[in-house]
Length: 333
Picture 1: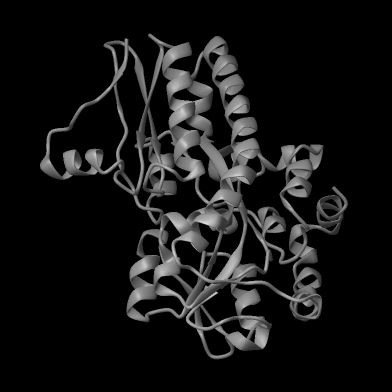
Picture 2: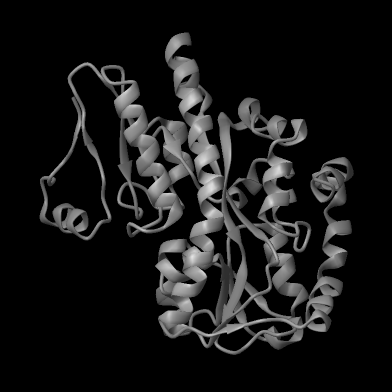
């Protein structure tokens, strides 16, 4: 049987464990170890809860065959190294932001288009379409990545060292974004300067003024305490933060037919749980920010219309690379 390790061999790792930052399993002899690396810390973030739940389910239901070890908070690989590690076989499972795959395919940029989706329900409907399911395999031949499922993490909101009620309020500011071409264009459309910074470094960059603002979900803003070092959050609801639950083709193809079938069933169950939980947790973390003293700005209909008008040309700009049909499928989901 597997059990959660009580400690590791170094003081640093033990300290991380006691802080809730590291979770791993003691695997039985003969079991195949499957390493799941991610960058999120703490114990309350929906992604942390769901990854640990997935690992526990695999370790229980595939006991004796597969054993999942979870390495959170960049304790194994940071987000700048994890994709390389996946292809090298140093890790078998990741759940990074879908925006990280822009170097491998333009199609996932459909999730980045500002104001394309009205809410999470529409996005989840889109992920169940044949077109979105086909996208899971779009990198398999070219890069060796296989998407396992889309995990939503909520809609995105801007934080900054001043209220951002209309796009022009951001003029001249440095705004942290992920490595997404569309995200960069969105920030430029606001008259601001996009800055790509690793997730683990965002708090320090905000605190020291390296950047003036960032965009994220309620859960990330709360669990990473970004609200502590920002003037306020603006409830723009402008994009979705989606994670791609991903593995390598080499790992998936190395499993026996029986193990692969059972593993993929567990993957599907985890994806359903992820997207069911996120709405509830995001609402809770919005309230947590307010209770902790954070400030939230809401937009008037006129202010929101100004944001939409500013961002509308981005849809047309990326129509050719993403595909008009895919955008229409997403918009109509």
